[in-house]
Amino acid sequence: MAPFYYGGPPLHLPETLTVEEVRQIVEPKGAAALRRERDHPIPLRNRIMIQVGLYRCALRVAEACALRRHDIRWDERRLLVRQGKGGRDRWVDLSTESVAILRLWDARRPKGDTFFCSLKGTALGPRYIQAMVKRAAKRAGIAEPDRVTPHVFRHSRATHLLQAGANIREVQTILGHASVATTMIYTHIVQPYIAATVERVDETLP
Image 1 (cartoon, rainbow, N blue to C red):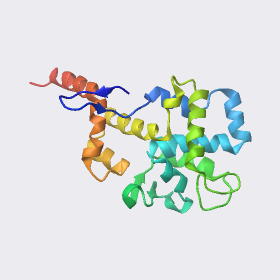
Image 2: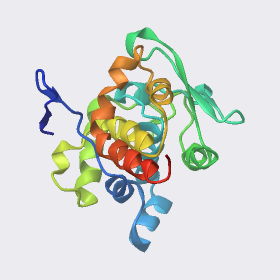
Image 3: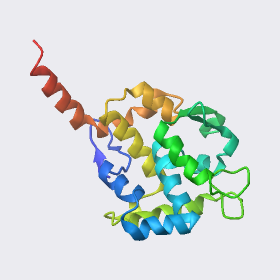
């Protein structure tokens, strides 16, 4: 993404996807895709890892690899990220729909501690997930698919939450940033949306 200039050194903004591009990647299209997920657990696992793990929960790739089944609190609708960046634990809230999606994989996954595991029950590695994400982007017809990395879904989630009206502190908590200053980078991406909001509000207020 091109640098953003604010009167000082150029600020390089995170690469993001649009909401529609994320939807293209995570929503199976057509009978063939649905059959593939029904007949083979790997496509189902990969889609759910991207949709819920990397995007909705904004997990870093290492956090997705390390997620354990017992760290998902199904009834409480949240999951525990252990030893995230900086060695910090954090809780991530899950929507009712996200819990239901995770249960689809949980019903078919091999026995083992790691949640997003191989068919042998072993943990997946970051390189595998990085390659899987690029394949999914290419299959979905995303422009410049090589720009799509696991971390891009995390950036995209933060941006989309702000665009939808979440406040910066909420996004900071979801991402697990120690300082809100780190999260503030996303406000530069959504600046046009903020300007549009001001324009809309000023039409109705004194």
